[in-house]
Length: 250
Image (tube, rainbow, N blue to C red; front, side):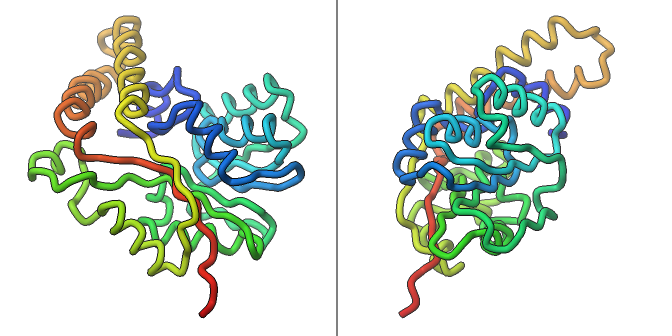
C-alpha cells in the first residue's frame, strides 16, 4: 500500500491506528501531562493526539509527517479545537527529522516504527529529542499467540518482526528503556480502525471511474484487508501504546 492508498482508506479516520478516542484520552491522563509541556510526534498522521492533548492538558508541540493530505487535516483540526497557536505540523521524512536535543518533555511515534527500521531504531531516533526525565511513547503491534504460517503471509509480517508482550518488554529493556505504563487496544479498537476503512474504500470505489489508476489497488486492499482482519489480525495481533523513560542507572 502506497501513502496515497492510505490517504484514501483513512479519509474518514481521525486516529490512524487501532485506538479509540477514549483510549487516546486515557493515555494522556496516565502520562500525567501538564500545561506548558511540549511533545514531538514523528509520523503524526492527522495530528489528533497533539491536538486533543493540547486542548485537554494545555501542552504544545510539533508533528511531522510525509502526507500533506494528513497534515492539512491536522491543521484544520488544530484550528477547530482552538489550539493552532500551541501546535504546529511540518511535512518531512520522520525518519530523517532531527529535533533540537533535549527540547521535548514527550517524544512519540505511534504505530510507525518502520521510520527507524524497527523498535530499537525508532527509540534511537526519539531519544535525543527527549529531555532528561521525559517520557517516550511508542505504538507497536505484538503477537497475542503464535500464528499459522498463512497468517504471517496474509498480514505481511515476518514472525520475528514483532514479538509477544513480554518479548516487547525485553526489547525495550535491551534499548535501555523502562516500561512505566501502557494502554492497549482491544477487539473493538481493531474493528473500528479496520471496518471504517471498508466503508470508506467501498464508497470511494463506487464513486471513482472504473479506469481510475488507484481503483484496482483499492479493490484488492478492500478484499484482502477485510478477510485478513476477520481471519487473522483480530485474533493474533495485539496493539498498544507503551510509555517509556530512560532506565535508571544501577
